[in-house]
Image 1 (spheres, rainbow, N blue to C red):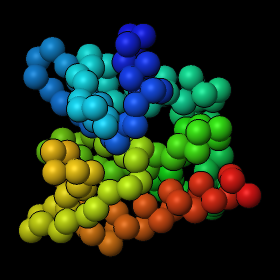
Image 2 (cartoon, rainbow, N blue to C red; image 1 turned 90 degrees about the horizontal axis):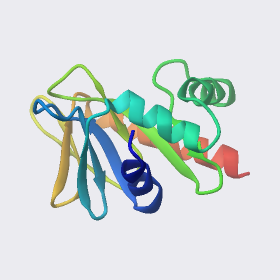
Image 3 (cartoon, rainbow, N blue to C red; image 1 turned 30 degrees about the vertical axis):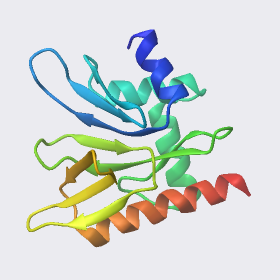
Image 4 (cartoon, helix red, strand yellow; image 1 turned 135 degrees about the vertical axis):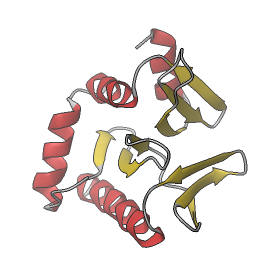
Length: 149
């Protein structure tokens, strides 16, 4: 992962990291300033982001499982100092994971998928029901509260 991508992830309000394939790129990082394409896959970006704040992705997943008791797809606390939490959601058009970092989003139910809406320009289709994504969002807030207390 290049220095510029990490700088963007740390300095801008990052909404989500999603798979995006066009021959050159493997993922797209959505921020409050627009989006940035990356050659790194989504899992590598989230792993590097966790390492930047002092732990591995597996370590953060394990901590969430221990604290909250969730086994499948737990949220992770990326940074304690910046209270940043990320939740996982399956991408609608690939079999990969979207990591949602900004929990301030709306959910719209479509026929075969749900849509996460950060603003009119950023809408991400996910392969989860409206209720399932609400539950994951609540788990993310629960993790944040547990670490903040």
